[in-house]
Length: 196
Image 1 (cartoon, rainbow, N blue to C red):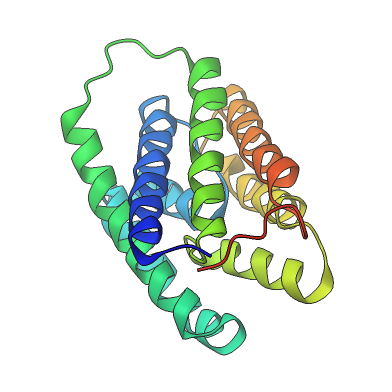
Image 2 (image 1 turned 120 degrees about the horizontal axis):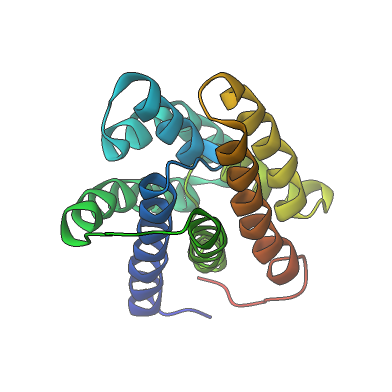
């Protein structure tokens, strides 16, 4: 059983890793799936800052979190989304990347984001939206969260066909595959039994 301080440390660590992963994606002009991908896409189309867009895109999904997953997950998810929104702004202003190979950004950004999500999932938190839906389907129907999220993320990336150049879209897809393989490999029913 996780103690409260372990949950706090995990949520801080997980959100920081996601914020850094999103910084890699954004710096290379790549997108990802989920509500983070929607926020990055919104930023590319409208110029909105990622943190504010990410927070706003997640607001409608809290109803599903409360109704389907309970208040505990909903509150932790709200805090995680808020932290990623704040930490992504802090990361963007604290890290200056002079050169970033897009392939490296896709693989590293996907790995960091996937590990961050894994940490959050294991401490009864998520980053809203598709994460909540993927966790719900895993818990209720034993569908692996990583595979569910991968399918939905692919649909989000397809929606960006008119915004991204083909090479950036392919690399965005690579990053999304890496992210979801981290989840599919490491987060499945019965694999991890720690509870908060």
